Length: 427
Image (cartoon, rainbow, N blue to C red):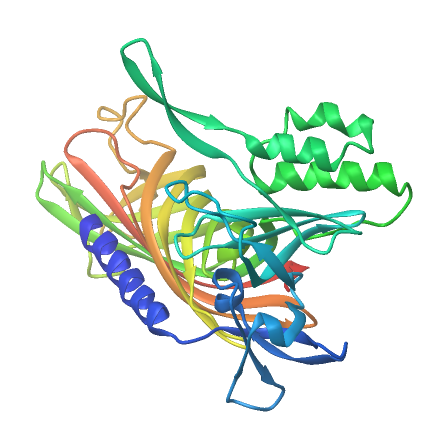
């Protein structure tokens, strides 16, 4: 059964992933800046913005047909979510196998502005997904690329690869007018966050007190409130007496908090989620369902309250107003209340007693911890409530139950419907 749920969840993810890949565009609110300096607001293709530096796909508000703008036709463009791109002439890197003859050719590209001030940090990704970084001083007409090269060196009889951080020499040359920053260059990694921190330090040195424009963080966390209902079905089995019973619980309130974390470049597509839920349920067999326990017929009743900790990966399809999603993962559950009872069937006034006879109950007959596999689908409305994301989702979970003692089983299937509200505004 667990394999069936996991396989079904993965199949849904693969199907929707295929549909997403086939999608032509993902338009988000944005703008373009024309060569005249005029700003035109509309929608920008987010996917193209993140992966392409050679064009901007833009459409005006109320129109469906987009216009393709080239770097030499615009000053720049951006998205309201915080990404800004500028059109720049950039020195093309010369392949190591081709000797450089004269100055490298210039190519105009859309570069993303990661930090801006007396010095700016710009970047773009090539077709192989490699990120290129540039630094540009305010008085410079053209940015300078920051590079590091890999070369083979021979150490005795061993050939190994060595990375030469040429970019540190470039930064030392560019920031020579601010000695206080030079010591930090040796500790600066060839990564966006590290380079942004260095550029900000230089800008603070050159222009103290000036507000620095910085691109939004690459990783974003969103806190959510979840509320809804859960129903469950526990399948009790006893190998000793060949008894089986389905014990159902009606819908009970379920409350939770969720934390969603994702890379900004994939933020509306792939996210990792951790949640904490609380739900209390009472499940009882209904006539004529009875089970045979040590030679007598009994009714069953399970009263449980669980703190549930689902951990999931969510894949969201692009969209401006509505974004469907699928998710799959596991749930670690802890029973704060675990009361499992039986009573003699067809006996007037019979009292509820512990499920297992005292002679069978040992210290580890029941476990408070359980693990379940879960999968879900839902729809997200990213800006329905003044920028706060709202989502409606349904999930199905199969857990390994609460019995440890041999010969008994109690697998649990849970289904819930939840509404989640983002406590931070989405962009």
